[in-house]
Image 1 (cartoon, rainbow, N blue to C red):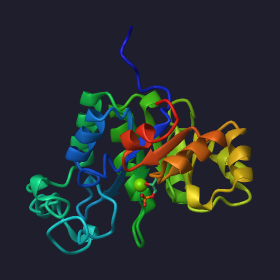
Image 2 (image 1 turned 45 degrees about the horizontal axis):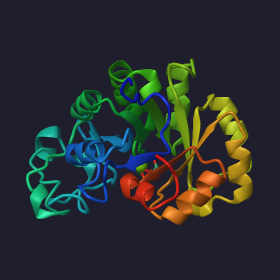
Image 3 (image 1 turned 45 degrees about the vertical axis):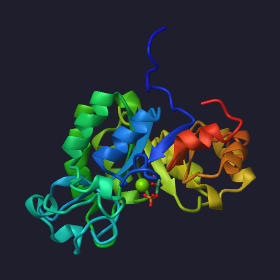
Image 4 (image 1 turned 135 degrees about the vertical axis):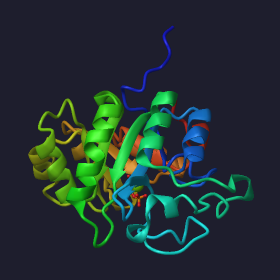
Amino acid sequence: PSPPVADELPCTMAHRGLSAHAPENTLSAVRAAHETGARWIELDVQLLGDGTPVIWHDGDVKRCSNGRGRLRDLSLASAKTLDVGSWFEAKFTGERMATLDEMLELVNELGLGLNLELKVNRGRDARALVEAVLPRVMEAVPAKRLILSSFDAVALGVMRTRQPDPERLRLGILYQRPPRNWADDAARLEAYSLHVDWRRLSARTAQAMAASPYSLLCYTVNDPRVFERLRAWGVASAISDDPGRLLRQSRIAG
Ligand code: G3P
Ligand code: MG
């Protein structure tokens, strides 16, 4: 039999890499996700002050490094001096912030699917983020192994303008709470998927979304009973801090 390909969405994705067991959004977290059988990962991307795209969630480095300060004030050289592993566990001491380019190389080496979230933190420029990220990612990762997602309407709109063909660029719309007119958003953007916080998703909305032309993803799903319920509602994929555990503890075949 041929090896599994990541072209189709699996029913789980590893949130920020295997963030239950490794420092989130790092190369180690992605390797760990792959080692436990994950086929797709979700990661966050944003820009340093010098314009380098890096894999990082917060607007500052306090929570996930041994340093302080805003991401927008860091150059790549200063970002690379930070230890981004020891806050999580001593064995990750020495881990460095990953640039987007370093991460894309690893993702391709491991053959993973990538749900890359363009994270527009407060006061940051959505257009600049898209201009820096989109060409690199589209060149590096085959279209079927890639979803570019964002909460930010400007980022999503600029991406669709840059690549109008929905087959060549799969866009995922992130919602904390889906608005009534989600179908209008999705049609306008020719989206591929809708990514919703499961805590704010009703059965009715989930079923309507699952019956639409768009795939429905939920974040962040760590409870096996919730996972079973969401799957019964038609959710295609659950973004989880520990997908292996979710699958082991639920009655759903991975
Ligand atoms: O992409 C899904 C999820 O990652 C969105 O929330 O805060 O974990 O980036 P957050
Ligand atoms: Mg995210």
